[in-house]
Each structure stands twice: as structure tokens, then as C-alpha cells.
Image (tube, rainbow, N blue to C red; front, top):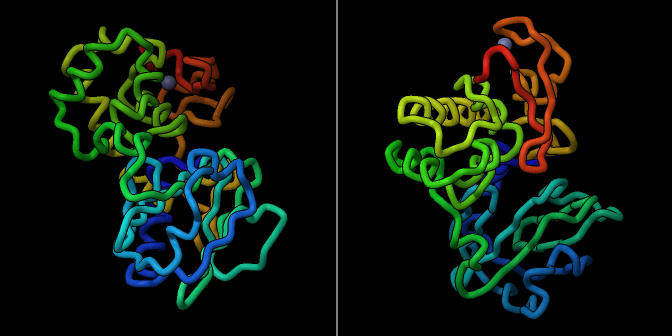
Length: 262
Ligand SMILES: [Zn+2]
């Protein structure tokens, strides 16, 4: 599932290829992917010039000379250039010098557009890199939910998903079921700095390919080789040697060390 580092990797390669280009035509082949935007005529997009490509959390935000085009990759969305159409091609966006293909086997991804950013994008919390540590502590302090679930809540900080929540909690030595409100300042501050560290390292390695994440060139990321707990159930903890356990927290599979995380 593409999270912040994977989407950042994609945005960094999309930006130079898209900025300044004009949209010549759009074709959509899935109402499912357009579910937040079924009433909007696709003609809105035709002839628009692309001004900027940014990431907001896990959303790819493409600013047009008028309005926005927003892509969320869901679980299996991929953005590729100039490939042939496949049974999983859900959208084709023809530009003046290339063609953008949106592929999505499971169709949890979405494509939306409009004059303004939708509420889904607008109500996101700050980037983990931008939030002040006091503000992060305040957000945790107000929530009784397990810290793992709070990290996944996109209105607290945006862009964190299952992989990086587990990895940050391990690095900070925090049990994923700990109630967020019970974390005192030093542990909350430590968690934020470990979160920033792991996200930064993952961006350097162009993200994690655990299922079918690929960048715009169809390449895998490399950070899966550096995971300390995620996907390592039963394998020894790299710090203490105890087997990594998998539990379910807030409905999500969660990996942690029973010894190192309290
Ligand atoms: Zn351990």
C-alpha cells in the first residue's frame, strides 16, 4: 500500500514530466475509481495546463491552471507513462508529449477533480515533517485510542500507514496498544522524531515494495529490506532476538517486539 514515502517517490518523478504540460484528452474506464467524482464532467480537465505536482499525505495533488486533479493510489494504484492499455487500466490521461496511464487491479484508488480541493484532501492534518512536537503531543493527549490507530488517523498527521506506523513505534520502543493520551511528552517527542527518521530513510530508498508498489518507471522500492518489524512475524528482533509478534490493533495487522516495546 503506497504510504508517504512511496507517494513522495512517485511525485518526485511525476513533477518534472508533468509540470508545464497540457492535458489533451482523458479517458476513464472505471466508475469505481471515480466514485467521489461521478457527477463531474471529465471535459473539465481537457485543455488545462499542469502548473504543479505535489504530495499531501498519500494524495497526489496536480494543480491545474484552473482547479485540481487529485489521485489517491489506494492499495494497488500505479501511475505509468506511455505503456500499453491492460485490463487494469482505469484511466488514460493524454498530455501534449506523453500519456499517463493509471493502473489499479483492486480499485481502492480514486481520481477526483474540481475547482477546489475536496474535503477529503482539505481536512488532512499536517505533514509529519511540519508538525511542531508540542502540537503532536497535544493531539495524542486528546485521544484515548491506541497509539497505532492514532498514527493512522490522517487528521492527526497525514501520510502514515501501516508499515511506517509499526516501524516508528518499534524505534520509539512504544507498544502499539498504548493509549495515545497516556504517552508523556518525552515519549511523544521521541515517537515524532523516529517517525520523521523512518519516513526520511524510506524516501531515500524510494519506498517499500511489499506487494505491488512500483514507481512511475515500474521499479520496486528498496526500503522493505530495512524493515525492523513490519512483515517480520516470527523472525528474531534485531535488538533483543525475541520473535516479532503480529497482533490486530484498530482492525490492522500490527508487528511489534514484546520485549522492546512497552
Ligand atoms: Zn526486541
